[in-house]
Structures are given as structure tokens and as C-alpha cells.
Image (cartoon, rainbow, N blue to C red; front, side, top):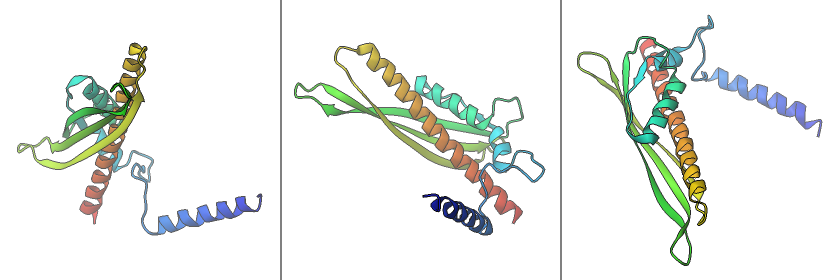
Length: 178
């Protein structure tokens, strides 16, 4: 077993070296001077517009946390998001009551520039699934679990949207530089 650890370490180093040789760089990589990289700077310049309903508020808050866009800096972009969560019963009992609910959160987003023409820069979609069990005699437990699932879905969708935007900003920066 101990002979495997050095081999794994060596393989990890070789894989990291090969990835670096092909131009791989982390999305949030800082500059050589240690300042935030392109993706982090551009994400901080995104203003996330309010999103309707409680799940939308959770998503907006999660997006603001990931983008650090509420730090008071200048905003150059607007992010409009349409977000909804749909539910379906997947565990049906013989008496037709549901024992499990699956929720699907979907967000369609559009990034626009704050220029005179309100230019649409990019659009995308993010989606997350989760679920919870229903208990006959525990209404408040099911309600609390529903809230927790909606928050997890909002967090997962926010991760996807932030990553999609970060990748787009990096590609745009690379295209402009090269």
C-alpha cells in the first residue's frame, strides 16, 4: 500500500505538468502580481437584478455572494435572471398520496452591457434537481424540508451561472488578447 502513494503522487505531478503544458489555467486564477484575475474582476462588475418570489431572492443572494458584486464597485454589466422551481410527486402511495417530491430549478439568464444600446453579451441556462420526503403527520417538517431544498437548488444554480459567466469572461479576455 505504501508503494502506491509515491506512484499516485508522481502521477498527479505528471498530470498537472501535462495540463499546464496544454495551456490549462484555473478560471479564477489571479494575475502574476497576485491581484484578482479577469474572471473575478469582471464578475464583481455584474449587477444582479432582483428576481421574483422567495426562491428568486435566494438565487439573487447566492449570485451576489459568488460574484462579490455587492462590494460597492462600479457595475458594467446587468444580469437578468428568470428563475422558477417546479415540483412533481414521484413516490405515490396506494392511497394516491405522495411520499416524495422532486423539485427542478431552472434559470434562464441574460448578461447585458451598460452601454447606450443595452447590448446583449451572452445568455445561458442553469438547472438543478433535488427532492424531499413527505410525511403524513409532519406538515411543518415537510415545509421546512421544502425550504431547505429550494435553498440548495438556488445555491447549485448560482454555482452554475457564476461558472458559466466566469468562463465566458475568460474566453472573451483571451480572444481580445490574442
